[in-house]
Picture 1: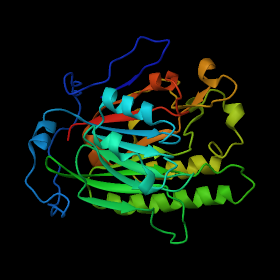
Picture 2: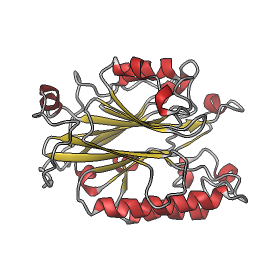
Picture 3: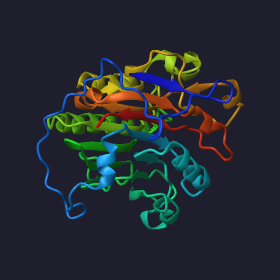
Length: 319
């Protein structure tokens, strides 16, 4: 397995595409996983399409990107979808209600769209080349939580199914307010959800903006972040709880390169100075790790016109 990163001041490493599939690592486990057969839903009640058959011949690319406003970033989103060609894209902070999401431009590229929107804040979306068999909105565990931060899709792949969850974890700042307990509570609910899903023994990808800096080497200056909600010991302990359940950080499974960042603030020239942090993650079940081929952080997108302060993070799987 391998990890790549690109940027404006480095030699650009082309992303794997259908025309140029990345090589599967010698130690990748390509044995078929014993899935429980799933009945096709009313959304996908036909036999596998030729498109699905073709996907068996190349890795499936699943990416996460905090878009920071889908309407403000629509041109960049369309350009990225064309260039990067993810099979499934998990978007956070769409900042749009479901009915106002700009579907036409994205559907024209061959994507199905599932959203869990919220006016002006939060909001998540799944864009997929495959139509999902099942979609679930909202993280279980708190019926009073009205914030749109979680959506799950189940997709048919060769040999069974894969679950892809798009999440936007609370920031938690300022720490001395109710926002930090809400963050920790949300992370506990996520751990409970993951524990239940892991019992299914299916490929599970929890992708999104976690608002968690896992380790000191995942930020440009640990002293700047030491008292921030993204790096407090309680935050990192809650993130370790996910790892202790058996989930794997996809990027760290493919590379030990440091530093690697996925976010650069708009202020104080952080992008130009490379003052970044890594807070966007794909956490994988063991069954998903078995199929992991490579990862990439698409850093060059941060240099585009009207960029998000986050960049896409992607993983390729041999489903």
